[in-house]
Image (cartoon, rainbow, N blue to C red; front, side):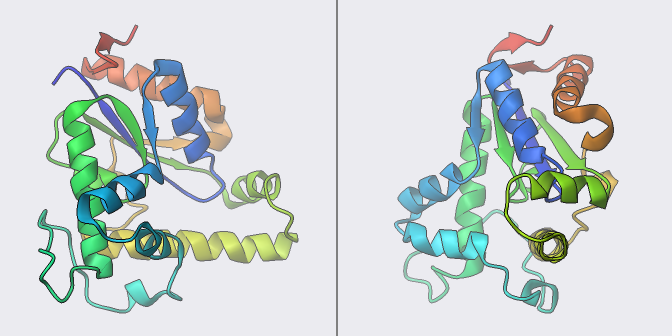
Length: 214
């Protein structure tokens, strides 16, 4: 393929989303986050609100306590009793992610995109992380919470992301073996993370936006 997709998983407060936006802007390619929900809703006919609720609301760790539903690539038909289930909502988002990966260079945030696209040769999977105190400091810049409230919030968000990832992939979200690159944003800075991803793409001989990375 003449294009490359970068997937970014990230600890809360590590700036992974910021890195993704900066990279997409630098390369002149699309950045996908919640847009995938809208596209999945259009594709399936299922309410966008249902996708949003499943995407945003941790069920108090429930994903970590029930049997995994590892994604295998199928979507359920409209006549299925589970058509609007959490599992099928994920399946439709995964379908959109695959369609995008086949068509264009882009950056995709979260949603287990690294696992969904694991068989694609044109993908760079990235995990952005940082020490807890760094993530706490960055998160405090954006929200008016006390330090204790933000600590609990970050822990809850990261637990949900880990449970969500394991439920749909059967793997550990924070396992470095799941990614091509694991970047500590506290050491590299956001711009440094962008440059590290571009450098890795160059070593791989990949291209973004239809042009070689220089």
